[in-house]
Length: 337
Length: 295
Image 1 (cartoon, rainbow over the protein chains, first blue to last red):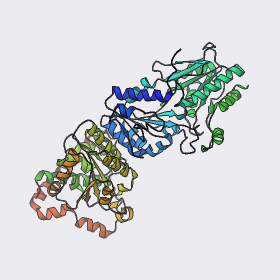
Image 2 (cartoon, rainbow over the protein chains, first blue to last red):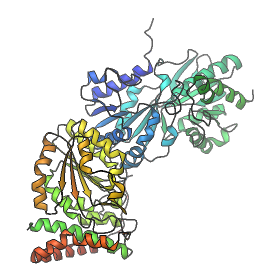
Image 3 (cartoon, rainbow over the protein chains, first blue to last red):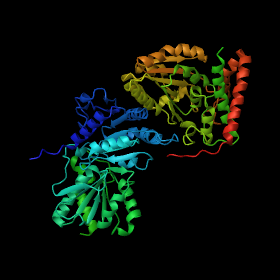
Image 4 (cartoon, rainbow over the protein chains, first blue to last red):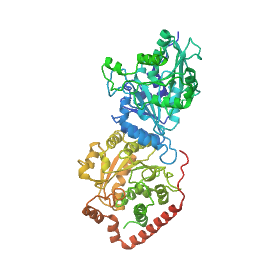
């Protein structure tokens, strides 16, 4: 019997470890990331021991240490910052938007700014209104600023060095609910990648030919797992065939690799955990309208969490966050079942 | 008496800044600019204490910081006028300058963490290089400053913070925006503080040499506070100070005082600097508008 797949937190840890191992210019910065604590979500556990002096516990200064990391990057280093809860990245907004992103081109030449900011994101753990948000959308549309999201279907060991090598600042969101989960998908599904770089993962039903497709679901990171759970039940209960495409790079996003599947299905649903309004999913929908207008059978189904703060109590939190049941219900409505 | 080179640098900065204001009046410049009239000696005093590998991070009022380190008024003016040969092809303009070893940004306080990060990289890479960051008294209102000082002290970073305390933040006098003192704020982090009250560049260098050397060698951060004097408006024509305050600033001007003490040297070098800047303006004016190649 095979050993179980590694857990998502272990996978991120391995990717960070590999980066530190292979690139002496790499440092990790963040609150409580050093041993023995190893980070609030234990993602950096063991790294400060393996790489003395290169995994630095910072004061509670998200704006300060993100700006410090930008300076470190500008001077030739490769910093990877951890924002303990993605909610706190608002404290670093100035440094990211007004310096790190702009520095790439505002001096009339290209400067290298290989800054990666990891953001454990999302709800589902009862942490309440200020420790549960999905703030990806606030960073969309900033020139030179990249937004990526990890998932169990993406190999971060290969993709993380790619983010660094690009020389432009990047926010890397990691859904907190994924950390204890295994790097595998539901047993009814298999997955492949739509592109050579491995940026677009696509999960499909093992028992159905890939050409057969009723609904294309596009979902990043943690929501992708809930979308797969919805797709599983939609298949078992309604014989509806969904595929789930999981993009690694949320912005800038080239929907090119999605177009074939979007046309094939005719129905596309975009799922994200954000609140509604100015969303990433809206950006995806607009691109699909522009590029696949005549091939869509209905408007893109845009699924988000409720327009609400995120309550702490589990039963209340469930009401507002986009979950498997809400995804399933909205897809059924869209297909008119 | 200071040597001709120092005086030339001081007066080159002064004439550069004066010409900028007149170019605005003539309608030849757009946007905004913040001149360092009255404060020229700060950067000129600091410049020879630096080594080529040191990185200077400057602010909105940064023309003097640049010209004190690099004798390049044409590159700076072309940048501000959006002409060919500008430092940043006209993209950055007055407040966003870049050259290997030198950069500025227009957001107050933002640059302190940035400079601390450059200092951390220097230390980790084993370079004996400083990061030197310029800030004003008004910038002490920004929280980023304290986050940076805290990390710089905790991690013993080779960071020199040069504070140009001219007693006024845009239009708000220091007593209305700054509680307590700057020395006390440095002390709260256990960071050494040097207070400079004079404007004699040689005397300032003598005062600061050992402290800057220690920042480099130990390494440790250092705060140098200049009690300085803003002669001109915050930016262009926005001087709302009462007439007495402007007169007082004028009476404290290092330039007028120096001209009174060493008239022969002053007049000679002053003329030279003015003619040079006039020639630079004439040259840059004739240049084509800047392109913007690689984005």
